[in-house]
Length: 255
Image (cartoon, rainbow, N blue to C red):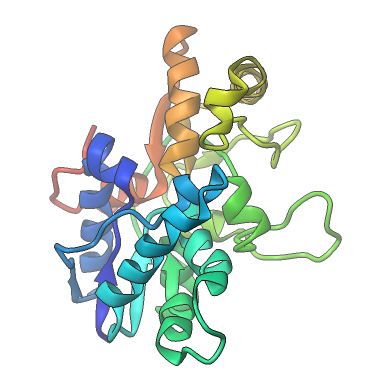
């Protein structure tokens, strides 16, 4: 397979250790990959704010950069969702090149479970873990079951983490509620965003969460800010960081 690694802007700028953990996990499973240095933002911040003309050149650039790869893998459900579900309007419906790039852009847990067929990861992580299901990953990529839909789906994060020695999962009162980040929503509606984040953090506190994880660092960035301000003793980790630590892969991904 010819695999490209796509690292979102906020991971590159604020959480490069998550990118390194993603590399460590891919290499642990024998995946050779490339990191195109010319990659840029996927355009999601502009699109979410209604600036569609500004997002279009970035979509075109994304397709240009990642054309020719069998898979494009990213540690971000929201950015993958932007490419897969919202790029179509920027291209002609007969454009087979852009369609292939869209269809083959996968979130990390999707790639591991649905392409590589990983169902068991051998390692140790003796902590109680609370999983935050990001809205894009849950409701657009369908990485787990959502409470408003009756159809049962596999929880890909639990599939990947569930067999680690010593791991326990928090039982949340509202397991798939939005954290309140929503990109520019956190700026435009700061008070509402913070209240929603408080609700999510309090749910994890009540459930006894020791490590809070997700597939989107944007959500975790928001929740970690609240955790720090409340001086809660909860460690925040992307699930790639948990996997890298659990299998003892040498990397700079440790916190």
